[in-house]
Image (cartoon, rainbow, N blue to C red; front, side, top):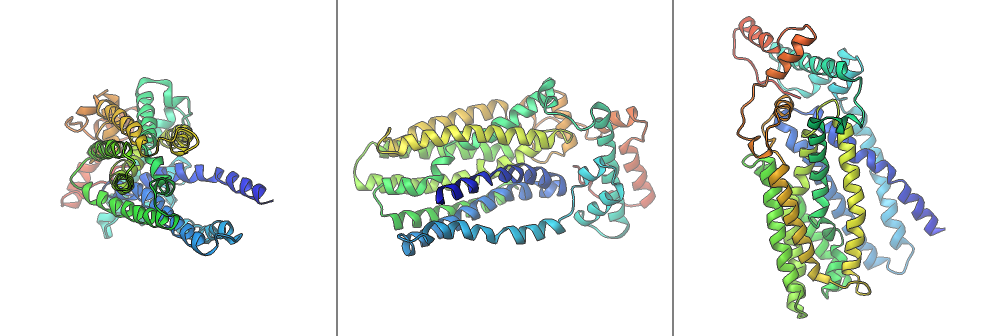
Length: 415
């Protein structure tokens, strides 16, 4: 009976696929460009808090209900606390203006933008109108190419194939960097020779460090680009993993404790770099027409590789299988370097770029390492759209608005 119940519970993870994909897409479309990094990477903060709560609950169950059915029932039951407050929050959240425009609900899209864009009075009305016109222009052009865009469109032409490849490999890098080893940290600490209770305590400390690292990532994003955080995080993880592997070659108690402590350092750099920034990158790589479908493909690519990685880690840590223990750090350090090598060659820098600028850079085939330095006219693509669908050039509208209002143009939030 218990096994059947657990099996049904695992089947409910089907819904997790919806949350994993749609949350990132929604966050990238609902917020201004200046807040895009914070809101998309907030997903990682939620993961970290969830892991922290789980570790705390498991520690309590281990201490108080080790020989009781509550030991496994309580962790499952407490998960039902979250659906109701989340449902209420989602009900009152504004709908994506991009989705509303696609469905022809222009008035609702305007109200959504009024809720999400800052400003007051005529300035805000101008900003909302300009943003709405830009969304409508972009979507009308995309609908001339295809009504909604299919999964085949994600790989059909060279431009979208490149964007889909980068999104998929970017998210795959989140698991090939050895992050799953952090997920099995409690078992890893036990293998290092600490008690079960202490192992759970170490895991709690590790997840607290992960939460702190995500906040540090928000601060660092003001000074470092997306690629910088992705690459430097991987580099530090690789160094730590190689040191862990080296300590694994020793059987002393100090070496075992040292490898366990360094895994906390790995968790910190993981949540400072690749863990949060991936959620932002995968939302910036696709075109607006294919954003949701590309994110779905990228997340599924991650999930497939995650299955393989999980099996590998179980074999590496299990004393009755490969029994690598801390020496598995060599393996994951190598994969960190391999992921870093791909990022240097293929992952572009998108920090400070609007979606229309990113589209133009991909259209021009700019190499990944020249994205940051290449200057593009943010109105060039919009002008081409305007000509084809017989609407005014957005740049002319902007200049006219400046003359009419007699003041400096407010910054436009490009989606």
